[in-house]
Image (cartoon, rainbow, N blue to C red; front, side, top):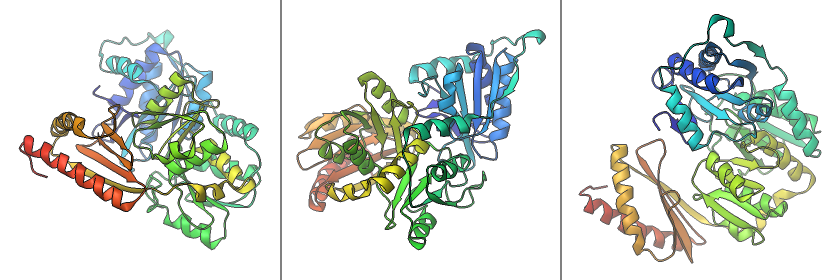
Length: 441
């Protein structure tokens, strides 16, 4: 596919993303779907891109329903009332980026096959315009936030104590602070003004990016900290001691607490999930929330997530919902002491690094050669997304980036010595592949 990546369409505004593309997306979608709900995040370019998409939808006879500035999970949740949903967002990317995510009625993102079919229509210049008396209409849909918030409150218990909520100046500013407060907590809101320049911090809620929230949790003696990305499909948690919880470990503890029988995670997730959940079958899939959601539906799994901070609950929505997860985890943290469970987890040592290439073609050639070489490793080999090798003392993953000319490497083991030993073996294999291809690192 030329336009769609693993999470919709995304690119730099004025280059890959422009009003002409928005118009084509709208026309392709409106030609297939009569009723389409449209939302956007806080980026400076979102109104422009949304307007062009709406023009495309209505130009071919579809009706567009405007939800306004809403998080992605909110838009996905209310899509159940329409034929499709369009979210204008670039998620956690920098402010110069924007893009589009598309949603089905069950809250699941467009699958790869759906995206491929829509891409053909986007590139098709023969989609007919509707005549003047069949042009679509534009409607307001102002209650999306209230509907999503109400559904969460019906499922989640009280939240007590003090909670710091860092929205990163993104779309969750319109819901998460209000939701946590409505559930009973004292809320201290940080970066909760709508600002597409993201002046408070970068949009991705990395540990090094949310230092202000960490400091505020400590300063105010808060019980919990919550940090979102730009569109709310991700969430990161900070303990009362100011420690950022790794998302793999959150998945492990939450699955154990809920006594989940089947969990879906990507190949780059920690082995701690299996170790802490002997009661569960763990299904591994490609990196990307849509792939996690697809496997959850296929295997009838109730819970899934990714190390990036996405969590999916199939009995609520197949969209990664950082807002629902924020409320649920806040309840478990302040009412049921779930934070204490993290001390029971085995501690793994992890190394993450990248190999950079000049082109994507070079990256692909390297991966083909490494897959051939991987047959020499001792361990259980998984090729669902790159090469993952599980050994007795740990595991490693070598997988191509879906967006850059890079190969990403993850190594994990129970001891630092085991990590080092695996790293030496892996480096030798990579060096051999480079030499066979007559490259040098």
